[in-house]
Image (tube, rainbow, N blue to C red; front, side, top):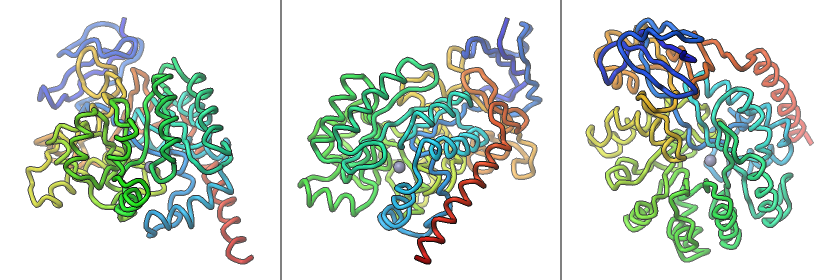
Length: 431
Ligand SMILES: [Zn+2]
């Protein structure tokens, strides 16, 4: 008996429709006509089956700050808008509500794993668990005090408790997130590394996002950010570095040799004017590259299909070379490479892989005629074409309808926070 049977989905690699059988969250059969019974059957009717997306860098609860401080560069955006609002509003309620909006958006755009980094991640865990989506719960570490902790020691102590609480969950896993080299001293970074190694968890951090960051790192530590992390021992196979826009050949070599992963966020890098990361060079150099949206307040959405399409076109344009990246590589970066970075066997439609997948409706005029499904996913499709989303065998969306989230609640909480935040901003301007 199968748990789930997908009938007649078009599989691009095979060039024809197939049935896909899923049991215990795993793809157990891909063949022309599966006769086995299933608890639930989806009739795909020729919709295209692809792996779902792994959004490898985000701050999902920042959905509540989406649209604020538009058009500012990174440091102004952080200091004048984001940190002010976070200082006022961030609480477990804020994080939970923001995560619910974000998770609804992530599922609607075909994502089944997101690597988060924020405060009060217990509240993100609660939402992700209920929604049935995978999440890397990133416990943020900073040198300066916030509502979470007053000192680096206190952050690390709380992080340890957090890690022990969420270890061993099915779809959730704890991650340690020293924020960046400009917000964590070398001592804090070293202690974070020790804790991550002791508890055997991933480290997720921001690295070499802007030129200013590189200049400040050289001034303060005599080293560029990647060199600095390397000198502290932080470049390891279990290190995930977001952005990595500005690197030298030597730094690329260090990343490659260490097995550390690059989490590319092209749309955020453009919006905050951080630059264009040399991703096709990284791929050529053998660096493990994944894709992320960054927080929904610097993008300003969590749409991985848009991100993927932008990534590949940016590489072509920046390199003046249409061959610098192809659609197939881009799709792999947005799917398989993300899951693989955190040791999840998903991101491929193959027997033995976990069933994280989407069904895409190709009947819209922008997808017709359909010659090359992978190229047309990358260059023509819109995330609103994603009809069905499955995470580890569980249907999270079918016929565009969210199965695990009450969408009326999403709209209600968005309105609630809009009123609170607008009130605060009005008050700040007039007093
Ligand atoms: Zn970020």
